[in-house]
Image (tube, rainbow, N blue to C red; front, side, top):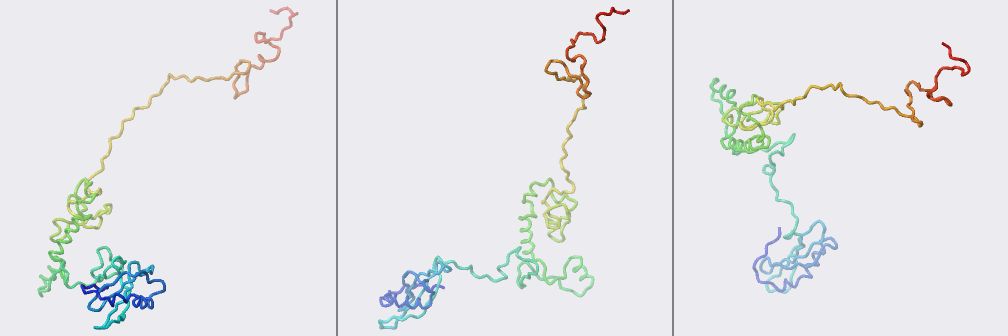
Amino acid sequence: MTPAAVTTKRDAILAEAVPLARAEVDKVAEPGTVGEYLGMDMLGGRLAMHWFECLSPGYRGWRWGASVARVSRSRTATVCETNLLPGPDAILAPDWVPYADRIAPGDLGAGDVLPYRLDDPNLEAGFEATGDEDVDQMAIWELGLGRHRVLSAQGRGTAATRWYEGDPGPTCEIAQQASAPCSTCGYFVPMAGALRTVFGVCANEWSPSDGRVVSLDHGCGAHSEVDVRRPRPASVQDPVLDELAVDIEVHETTEGGASQGDPSTGEGDAERDAPGRHPDEATTHESPDEPPTD
């Protein structure tokens, strides 16, 4: 902790003891970590602190200090002690907080144990046995008592407020877009006791809130009485068979312009296309000197 300066008349003899203070700081500091002189603060009558910059990389903003003093009517200053103390711009660890106060909701993991709080304002003394078996059985079994401590009115109010204003309440996004509230869902199980007027437990495995506390006006898309909007099927006309359509088959032609035969069979007008024969000549073999026969 940095000593606080006090309003005291400046001591000229102590102010001149800068070389003495630096020499003592150099003895305890690592070589090269004592920087420029930063000034002097009066801590009391004939007691002052000289400050020097700390150049160590791990102590940015810290200062070397050497306290000097002198006895009454003496003109010689002596060094009392040297320190490495944080300055106004030093990086410091946060203030230490006890474990019981430091842990926050959601921090508890497997194997962790919270410290016992004797004066927990959210709890109050539970039911004490009366000796009457019928009365005790009613309180322990039917009312769920029989514990050393139970929720107090403050504890119930705190829990109800936290639940209702959080995800189990009606203000979360999934509840805002729901088609119906949990109060009309068949999977909604009301809670016991005074909280049943506002909260219950979801028992729908398809819901994101399954096994969790939900408010009556909470909601989701897994409501038991809500169905999806089914679109009307589009009308499709009967198929039409076009019997008047004509398929045109194009035959390729040769270089001479004649039509080729069926390429699949290889048939063609071979006789007509034979060399030296006119297309109009008869196909019979008759001699020109012989007369025509009947």
